[in-house]
Amino acid sequence: MNDRRTFIRNTAFATAGLTAFPTILHAGQVSANDKITVALIGCKGQGWANLRTFLGQKEVVCAALCDVDQNILNERAADVEKLAGYRPKLYGDFRKLLEQKDIDAVIVATPDHWHCLPMLYACEAEKDVFVEKPLGNTIQECNIMVKATHRYNRVVQVAQWQRSDPHWKDAVNYVHSGKLGRVRSVRSWSYVGWKGSIPVQPDSDVPAGVDYDMWLGPAPKRPFNINRFHFTFRWYWDYAGGLMTDWGVHLLDYALYGMNQYVPKSVMATGGKYAYPNDAMETPDTLMAMYDFGDFGLLWDHTIGIYGANFGRGHGVAFVGEYGTLVVDRSGWEVLAETNSVSANKDFIPVPLQKSQGKGLELHVRNFLDCMKTREKPVCDIETGAHIARIAHLGNISYRLGRKVFWDHDKQEFINDKEANYLVNAHYRKPWELPKV
Image 1 (cartoon, one colour):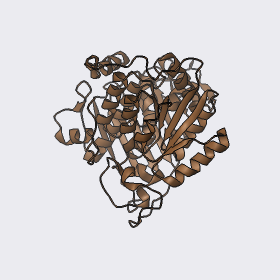
Image 2 (cartoon, rainbow, N blue to C red):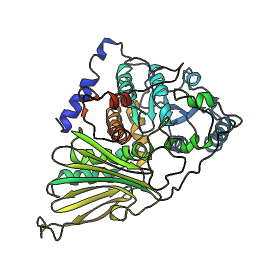
Image 3 (cartoon, one colour):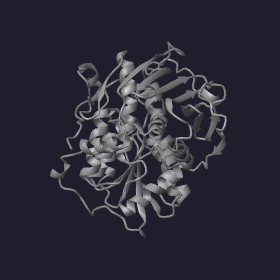
Image 4 (tube, one colour):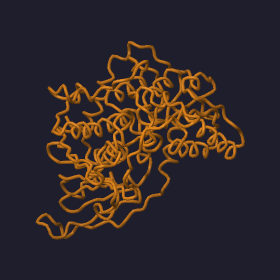
């Protein structure tokens, strides 16, 4: 049940029954020669990086920007005007932006807890979506986002842009060739040496120009704290899943793709705040999660504050085979020979570093725009993004419970485990509700 064919069948099965809903076959589509009008929801770091890449494509124009921080909104409006020569419309509420009829596609680059609702409403408004990773902040959100994509017949690209970077696919093709021999150990890791401790800060007044209640949205009501805002939101369970979901979706994706297996039998994670036990982060700065697939094991390993990781690389995926080990990261891939083991093959030929082109995001955006015109599935479609987000969430759920968990992919729930299944679901603060699709 773990092979790629079964994964695709099961994913399709999870969206069965949607034929009862009307589908939109022609509305909101663009022809091959049309200009494509985009809007950005969430305008700070990665959102702006995405929009700049979109504006580097000749047929793209930016119609609107949305952010709950008026300071960021004004800054980005000036940036667009400088870059493109015009000033887009500005919004503080994404729902108002989605009423703008001339928008063909929306970039959702908000904090993780705000990925689901804008994406769902954009699909309902007949707009295609480029949504940041991880797809959802819970497994339940991921599943609903898959259903919405199919119900409204939209093109949705998840921003796991390594799917468009050719050297990653080349590395997977080598693994699939069988030249490594049998692979029974796969390792994926992210060691974030640049990040140090986040000192504990007192709660404070909301900064001028920030709609903090809207920023919280469906997350629990809490006093404003600078540590939970903008970039550092990712270290708090209310809004994100730490490094496991931030980097894990990129690297676990290729670990599973390389092995052509997608559904683990069990997950066991351990770790904690070992580097900075008294700082303000909630998510673990050190975590190891072991995914058991029956005939091989996949290890996720992350830590903050050091770079000393596997093969001298701060992040990557390693496929450890009988005859050699393939190592891949964003800089490129290489194959190292197994020289002294009982399984070593004297005829095995290692592969020197095959360098990246460094154009992953650009190619990812290009693929999305092309698929908007052809209505084909993009390279990181909604099923891929949803599944890899689920895999990362499984690791976090095991960590938070402090024990091994067993996942039933067909039922999309843990086996006889109420405590774990509570963490599968989204628990929204009123008046926000997760729509039924």
